Each structure stands twice: as C-alpha cells, then as structure tokens.
Image (tube, rainbow, N blue to C red; front, side, top):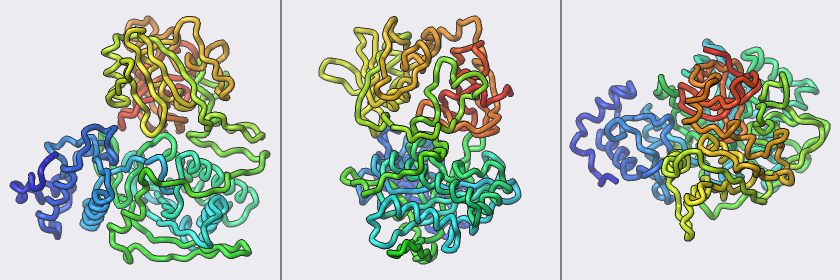
Amino acid sequence: MAPRGAGDEDLDALLPLIAEIRGVENLQVEAAALNEVRNFLWEHEAETSRSATHLLLENYPDWWVRGRRAPPGLDLQNEAACQELQRHAGMLYRLGIPLTLAERRTPVFRLFQDLEAWGTREAAPPLENLIGPDMPLTRLIGSVIAEVFPGHGGFLDAAVYDASGLSQTKGARKVSLRLVWPGILVDADRAMRVRDLLVNRLAVSCAEGGQLAELEAQLKKANPANAWHSLVGDAAYGSRASVRMPLNDRVAPLPLRGPEKRPFAPVGVLRFSFSTEGKVKMEWLCRAEELDPAEWVKIGSLRQNDEATLTEWSVPAWQGNQNIPPSAARNGRVKVRTAAGSDGPGQGGGLRVRGTKPQVQPERAGQLTTVERCFTIPAAELCEKMEQHLGKAGIEPDGALVWKQPNSDARIVMYKEDQCIKVIGRVNQVRSLVLVVAPYTEAPKGLGVALDGFGAEKAPGRAPSEAFAPVGGYSAGELGDAEDKGETGRLHIAAQDFESQGQGELALRQGDIVQVVLDPEAGAGQDRWVFGKVEASGESGWFPLSHVVPS
C-alpha cells in the first residue's frame, strides 16, 4: 500500500491528467482534494480480485490508478473506510467525474430492483411513465413488496436512482432505474423470488387490461424487447456477483472501454404508506437536491456486515395454473446442459417456461453432493487454471488443495497423488464449478454420481457430471489436435438474447460478437452447446450454438 501523500509531488499534473482521461476541464476544485481521493484509493487497493470488496468496472484505468493499470479492486473492511469512500464518491459525482466502481454483494444485502427499458438511438421510453407517485407500475411494485414483507409497520421507503441515456455498447437509448429498499435485507434467493412474483403479477394485471396493459403496449412499441421479464432484471441476483454503486458511472466494454456518462443519479426517496383497508399512498419523501451526494451513496449501497440478518418475509406464491416467468437463475427454467445441449430437436436450447404445476426446488436445500473428476493436464498446470478462476488454494491437514467458491460452502478439493479432484457443494453450486474444471478434467471411467434425489435432470445414459464435460473428456490441448474442430476458433454474432442460468454459462445480447473456444460436440447439430468468449467484454462460458450465426 502507498503511504498517504505518495502522489503529492505531481499535483500540478493531476488536473491536466483528468482533463485528458475524462475530458473534463476547468474543474472547480483544489488539486489537493483530488490527491486526497487518489491516496485513499491507493491505500485501499486489494491484493487480489478475490479479496476485493469493490471492483473496477471493466478494469477501467481511471485518472487515479497507478501507471495506467487498474488494480484488482478495493478492500474496504470497516465502516469508517466505507464512509470515506462514500464521501469521495459523492464529491467526484458532483464534479462530473464519477467513480466507476461496483460493490461485491455480501450474502445478505439490501433489496433492490433494476428496471431497464430499451428505446431507439433517438429516444427512450419516458421515465415518468415508469416511476412516480401516480404510476401504476410503481404502485404494483410497492404492493408486492408490502405483501412479501408484511412487518413494514405501515410504510416502506425506496430510494430511486436513474442511469438512463445512450448505451454505447448497443448504440440505443434506454431507461435504466434502480430501486433500493434500505429497510429490507435479503439474500439472492429471496431477491429472485420477489422478482419472479413481481413479473407474474405484472403479467396477470396486463391480461386483465387497464393502465399496466397500456404501459406494456407503449414499452413494446418503443422496443419489442421490452417484455416484463426483461424490464425487471434478475442478472444482478444470479450471474453477477458485483453491482454498480450509486453515483458511479457505467463503463462500456472493450474496444470502447470508457465511462458512458450515465451514472446512477439520485431521483428521490419514495414513501409507500399502507392503510388497514389495503390502500397504498405514494409520495416523494425527498428529492435529489435535498440530500448530500455522499448520503445518496450511503442509502443506495447494498453491502451489509456479517451480523446482518434477513428481514422476516412471507414466501411468495402464485396460482399453479399460471406460467412462471423466465429467470436467469431459477431451478427448472433452463434444463441442465445435456450431451445434445437442448431439450430435443428444434427446441433451441434457451429459456423455457415450465409446466403448470408448482415445482419443488430441491437445489435450494442444504444437502451436499460430490462429483469426482480426473486430470487431463499436469497437476501444476491445473493449479494455475484454478487460481485464475478462484484465487489461491488453501491447504488441508492431509495435504489436499482446496479452492472455495466465493460466498458459499462449495469447493474444489485436489488430491495430486490420486490425479483427481472432488467438487463438493449443493447441486446448483456443483454444476457451476464443474463447468470451470470441465476443459481440464474428465469423468472417471465407469463412475457416475446419482443426483436424482436432488432433482437434477440427467442427460440420457450419462451421469450429470458428464453432461457438463466435453464428449470423450477432451482437454484444451487435445481439442487442438482433433480432426473435426467444429466451430472452434470461429467468430459468431448473437442472433438473439440468451440469459445465463449460472456462473458457468455465458449471457448473450443480440449483436454480441463471440468467439467459440471449445466445441466438444462438433458435428452433433445446431442444438449443441459450445464454450466461447464475448469479444467486447472478455466474459466466457457455455451457450447454445442455436443462438448465434457465423460472423
């Protein structure tokens, strides 16, 4: 860590540097104040991304980073450091050079909803049609939250933030809103279930006609992609472990990689008051200008300390004859990636709505299962691969190496002498971790792990662990020598969106350019799954080949 004052010698160059990188000149601030911010951020640089509590979006090398190379993140472990960050973030937002940070979600966090509606390059749907005291969507959201968390005492407050503007990635304007409920603490599972209930209620209300049906028609007229399950996002609860902070700017991925000039700006705090007759009154408790920017950062921050407990709730439920809206992380929405990569011929391998019966969710239970895999590369090389994904390994008393999945009890245990690893955790966690190790391992001959009791869906004739692995146990090196490489190495364009089910799968947005890195089922048909990397963001994972077309 750099000692305080380490950058004092180049104060004269600080303002020109900011003007060069952020394009903002004539800042009305003393260079010493900016240097205080820089020194604070330097002092709290994390040693590794795994130890970071806050991450730099797209590893953007902002004006404050050393040597134009972004650190792995920031490590802020106490309340005083967090308050200092909030103060600095507020000041930089006010100056027009907001930070570009995301906070890593803690196991318990403040409930929030991200609402996104797309428009065209020229215009986006009007913000005032979505959120406000007189808006039907706002009323429905408040009613659902009050229903699920009945111990509200007669009122609930939601802080509203707006990051609407032009998306440089897609070249279209969008409405991007966030609602944060400071008085409600949840985990990812509960947040997802609240989201599912909200989408269900929206669909039911629209089927009955009225104002929400009119709003849905307006949104789809602005952009056909604006279905309710897309507008009420769920990626921040499932596939993303970090969430952009309030008053922080979004960063466009490579090759653009730069702030999009649409930070999460405060709109106000909405108060929902509930009468004993079931009526809902909505009003602005305060507006953006009534609170200091640092206070807005504090209100909208999600992380909680280790002692935080979940808010009492009433488990969401809806009628069994209504379709469950698609979701990126809910068990039973997307089938396990089987050998064929789909439910069957012509099914596309994407999101599917399940049947009409309420589904039991065994993967939510605390039962653990174990999947064993054998090395296909040297142990030292496998260790390097695991460190890239999960950080440094711990060492057990028996000499085994252990990599733990962040914020869970799932882990990968390596026994070098036996040339094998064990993936241990709940079924959904094991699925995610097996995807990490699949390119470098293979299933033991004649062995399969029976997960039927946990509700996992099996590929016909194959163990669930094998369903995640390339056929024949190809390693990355072996694939390079294979006669039929299929789509390996080729660029494709996403023809439609694909929502990932977990960390091992790659979410796609229409127009994304993606390179296929691994095609173990080459020649098996368009419904197979392949492993690839999005060129712009560098994110990688499994996705259905049916969702892309050759570039």
